Length: 380
Image 1 (cartoon, rainbow, N blue to C red):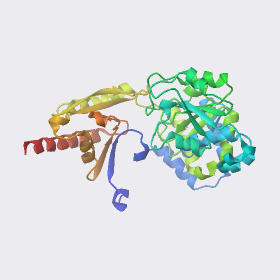
Image 2: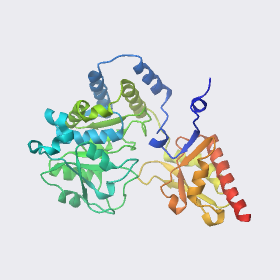
Image 3: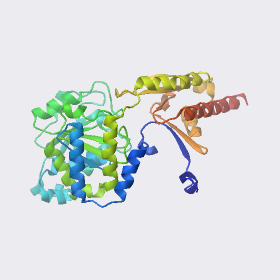
Image 4: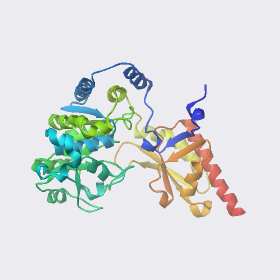
């Protein structure tokens, strides 16, 4: 039987970019895949399934409440809608045109640091707007303090939003705990988008009212999202299933798959940063033997225990810029992807969490081929 790659004429991928949505995020374990399959083969009362799995996860994480949604982006949108709509059933059904009615003048401003208003594959502002919110930026692109957040709070503020991500500005920014203190002082909910974060309880413990995770990133579940938090706020998120959340619903298989993935994630052991360094050391040594390339260990910019390989190209010596090198590595039957955020500086990063030793050897071989082609062009 033809493979999926052959049947649909798809290229194989070596994913050295990390848990990226553009590449399918992650590959769940066999146990999770079996749970997804079992879920597909049975019927459930969906409201009951949502509630009971949420209760189960909340106990696992020692939080007040939890609910599974279709993805982290949907979690942002539904959380924003939740803090605007609350228990107003009329607003739940008419959020899309409520801004036109003077009878529905409710707080809808969402305050977040200016340096957190990023594009993570889609703009954060789009998710906020879809949820009926209006974004209010606090501070500056390179700094935001608790006082600057507080200065933007008005009677029209519905919530404070904090984006915990490598995409955001890291320096001179208030912490989640700082944001929680401001939220509590003003009797407002704090929403934290922690999509790719690995600690499923930390930000809740630091005072966040709603925390959003991707089910498919660190947790390695199926495409899904998790919202945990204080019981009243999570209940308002659940209500959005009958409002804007209907357009972003998750199926029974995703709910059951993520529930098991969370359980396995909490009880299992994951590769540490130190172990990643050991595994990537021969890879780095091989890269450093290629003329025009230098490589070294770097650590996750957002503070997670993730070690990566930084690869630096001497573009003048090689005769190609980094973007051309990356484009050539994505051609052919197997496409190789890296973290490319600093490609304009001649630097890329290899995230080895989803890469086998054999694939690391392939990366070295392909990089050598592309670089040597550049040398040959210079000689010609």
